[in-house]
Length: 271
Ligand SMILES: Nc1ncnc2c1ncn2[C@@H]1O[C@H](COP(=O)(O)OP(=O)(O)OP(=O)(O)O)[C@@H](O)[C@H]1O
Ligand SMILES: [Mg+2]
Image (cartoon, rainbow, N blue to C red; front, side, top):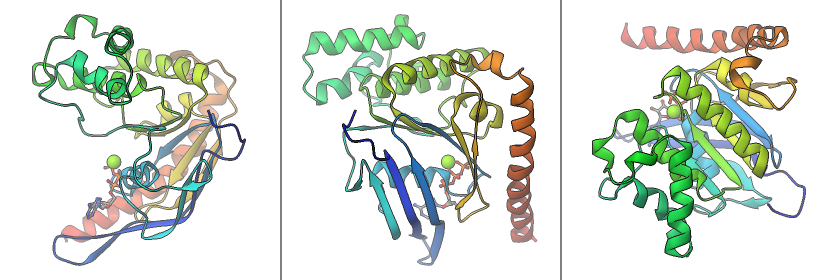
């Protein structure tokens, strides 16, 4: 972890306007101000298509902002840094590599000796429940299994900043709870800064220190909610607490409004 105690991530008036295939501009994110402290777990919720994934690509350095600034550990983001781990919304495994080789790829790339990389990769495959699958290729796995390979391949690099885009959406409820608890434990141990995008409001509250509600697109921050539930948390247990339900109701209202706006717009587009 970086020695100074400044924020891990800062977006200052950040915006992203894409050029569409027809040549016109499309603003996905605009005027986005958000500060994420070192060791903080921030969940981001917002209507589909509002600009959540785009926001993560700006933080990761995969895309540059077209307005404003994006800083990681106080420095403007220039390209993809090695402190950042990104679990993508879509599958991101190397199809020509086995499961084990996929998970070893990051450490090997950073120069970790083969035996050590293999050992670390195997430990992570065990944790995500794929210990018996290390010789398979991604196309021989289910969608949820591929997702778990991607999780292992990210966590194995001990990232200081963890960007996660709906990482558990392909998993069944039980596995999802297991992976969530695993994530909280991992995060508790490393104190990495996490930005976790999800459509599941319960999941966002159960996991995070703060829940950021985005507006209908172009995305900007509507409101940030502090989640004052005690830690350590077990996601299945924390959901049952009265305070959880209270917070849930409050955010649900705020989020619902933006989802309605997005839907009405969609309906207008079709008309
Ligand atoms: N490369 C691109 N070129 C043009 N438009 C884009 C590009 N990438 C994203 N967009 C548009 O920007 C908007 C935001 O997309 P983004 O993927 O960030 O949404 P999202 O909030 O992650 O949605 P979801 O919840 O469905 O994953 C969408 O309208 C999308 O069509
Ligand atoms: Mg997305």
